[in-house]
Structure formats: C-alpha cells, structure tokens
Amino acid sequence: MTAAAGQAQGREAAADGIAAARAALAQGRSALVWRRQIADTDTPISAALKLFEADRGDFLLESVEGGAVRGRYSLIGLAPDLVFRAQGQRAEINRQWATDRDAFVAEEKGALDALRALVAECRAEMDPALPPALACLVGYFGYETIGLVEKLPRPAPNPIAIPDMLFARPTVVLVFDRLADALYLVAPVWKESVSDPDRAIAEALDRIDAV
Image (cartoon, rainbow, N blue to C red; front, side, top):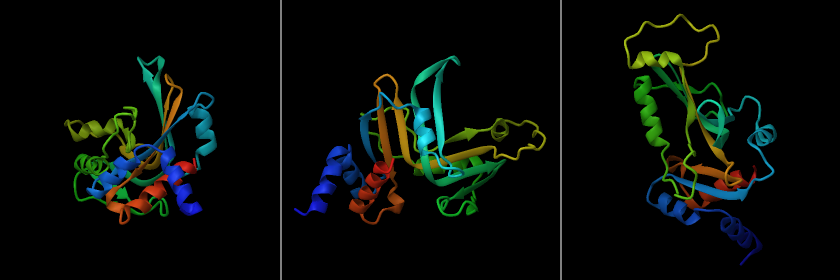
C-alpha cells in the first residue's frame, strides 16, 4: 500500500457513512459523508466567526423553544453551491453560485412548484445516527409568500428589495448538539454532479477536512 493510499484509508476510517455513501451513489442516489467529533469547547458563534466568508452565503441557524429557551441544535451552512430565490410567482435558481453570483436562471414553474422540485432534488438518505436538525437546503419564507396560497392584496413594494423566498444549498453543514457536546460535519454529494463516486467522496472529505 502506498502512503497516499494509506492516508486516504485513514481519512475514510475517521469519517462515518462512507460505505452507505458509496452504495447510494452506485444506485444513482445522493449521499451524505459525515464525521462526528467532540465539541465541548467550541460554540456555533465562535465557529461562525472563524469560518464565515463575506458575501459567500454562509449562515447560522439557531433553534429556540417557546421563544425564550435556546434549543438543542444549531446549524451552520458554508459555501453554498446553489441559491434559489423567488419574488411573487417568479422563481430563479443559480447553480453556479460559487463562481458567479449573477447566474440566476428563471424557472418555468411557479415559485412554490419550483421550490418543491428543488427540495426533492436536494433530498438525501439520512443515517439514523445523524441529528434530526440536519437540512441540506435552508432559507426563509417572507410574509408576502402567503399570497401564493391565499387571495390577499399584495403589500406595497419592499424598500429593502429582498426576495419573498431565499434558500441556499451549502456544500458543508455543521450541526452542533448542545446536549451531547458533539459536532457533526456533513458534506452532501449530489447524484447529478457525480461521474466518479470515489472521487466525489474524496472531495467531500476534503471539504470536511478544510473546516
């Protein structure tokens, strides 16, 4: 065995779900490569301060229970490769977000149907060992989106000009579990972008190692 091969095997041994990821990709399904580690000295805020890059689309999502108590999980998304936005019924997707922030392409479907199709595209089989808070497509619905399902007057134009809906698909997701003092680092591998499963898994491990 070469040193490089031994190093690759060592990386895979330190990660979780490699066999399941290979099996999923071989069957034409998307997969999750992930690693669990102790995080008793790190916090979501300290991690965000270290990892976020300006204008890249990184985000921190905190969970709150009852509007007063911080929840068990926090979610960090890094380096999105895809961004969805919608204004009224007009939806657009940028699949080159990492290299071209302006490469949005209009969808033929209405906003909600386009989002449903994207959610289905971004679905990957979840390992039972992963926390339920994990999500691979994260964003918001603005107040105005109620007009897509109920006949209500459209509010006046928004002076800050933000989309009614905005969702990002991160290439690396960090889930902090406060109860277990654990951190899950997850790198999705999307079936549409895979020609060589082994290489795709190696690149996913690279993204995890870079955090």
